[in-house]
Amino acid sequence: MKILTGMISHETNIFSNIVTDLKKFEERTLLRGREGLDFYTGTRSPIGGFIDASKTYGFELVPTVFASASPSGKVTDEAFETLLEEVLRGIKENRDLDGVLLHLHGAGVTESSDDLEGEVLRAVREECGGGIPIISTFDFHANYTELMLKMADILVGWDTYPHVDSYERSLDAGGLMMAMIKGELKPASVMKKPPMMPAPQAQYTGRHPMKVVMERALAIEREEGVANVTVAGGFPWSDHRDVGVAVIVTTNNDPGLAEEKAQEISDLIWSLRRDFLVRPIPVREALREAMKGKGPYVLADIGDNPGGGAPSDGTFVLRAMLEMGVKDAVIAVVWDPEAVSEAIKAGVGNMVTLRVGGKTDEFHGRPVEVKGRVRIISDGRFQNKGPMMTGVWTEMGRTVVLECNGVDLIMAERRLQPTDLQLYRSLGIEPTEKRIIVVKSSVHYRASHEPIAEKVIELDTPGLTSPRLAGLPFKRIRRPIFPLDPEMLGIVELKGFEEE
Image (cartoon, rainbow, N blue to C red; front, side, top):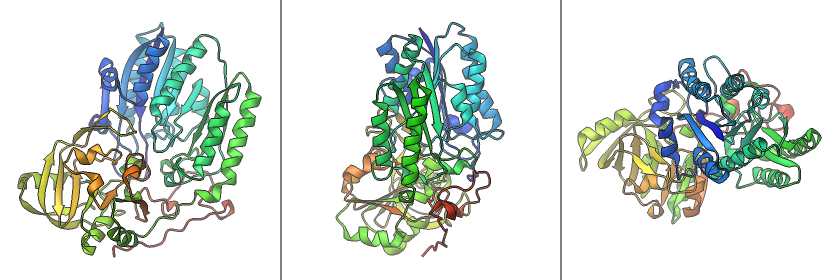
């Protein structure tokens, strides 16, 4: 049996001014053919799951392209068409395929389409024809569309945020593929989309309300006749009519059961909508508390999360830390290739004065002048050992640790959300020994940082990934929708921020 596989993954924040061209994929992940399978073999990743599923069920994977870019602005049509053509070429060159297993993100937007993934699945279906099973896995923040549902046989979403189950869900997808090929499964899927667009910070599956939702979804998935249950929190910053929460239930040839169970979960989510509001803490208030603790206090700069499309060069927290005299702290990771180059020129052990951050847009603060000693210069490469993407090698480009009056400032050439403690350890920093750890992340940091934290605090920082959604000029989302509209019970107002 031959199953074609590939990955095109991008989470698009249309408010970002960072254009996602082919170079952005090359900077993060762009692998082709056998090279991609070799890279992911032995990793707890979506493609690693497909690889192990092929061993478990005895099918051969036909690799195409494996592409992923850091969350940012719209994907250029040229980049999208280039990547899609590589997937389609794999189909054209292998007309004896038994199925297609893809990993797509679900929140991709191109210059010409709000529905990157729907367009991929449409093109794949047209090339394959109607008789070949197509199954795709998706990120928890997917904005599911009717086109995706129509063009694929089964959509399998991740169940966790932080995303620690991407490997397991790919194994599930492999099992569903085999059941379809053997004729044991005739999927019938129903999707429900309550009018909700919660901020990702409210979608953390380790606490109420999403914890309650996922517990019920997983219980239903275990019921007889149910093949898969997928719940997505959605990604608001893609700004189109399909943005938001979705529930998809797939049964074995029982659309009535799928309808009943999808509606049940949708109703549950809607009943909990007031609990999806996020109430972060002012920066200086959080720092004052953390300075009194033993640590590590993990402070999340949720407004400047590169994992959601923010630039990761925001300076509100850094400025406050320096002005308040914070000691025994580390901040990860400030994206500033210019400052990195200047620090490297100065050399390890030398003092340098730099203008850091605040260079991408007007939303994330002004550059901060910092004076510090260059402590470490690194190639920025490390292997994940935590629960997310275990075993995958990560590259953040040339990286510098600048010691600034008790604050270890990590600066890198590439944008990276800190999700793994190996980031620090690869730079000679032991995170468990720090009093304060500042992470530019919304939720993913929790998977590795929460177990070592005395306390976790979400900081009320402005930026493209702030949970204060009413502060952004949404133009294309369906209205009314929670939490933006009063009739949805929970309008959120954006108040002024001060660089105090």
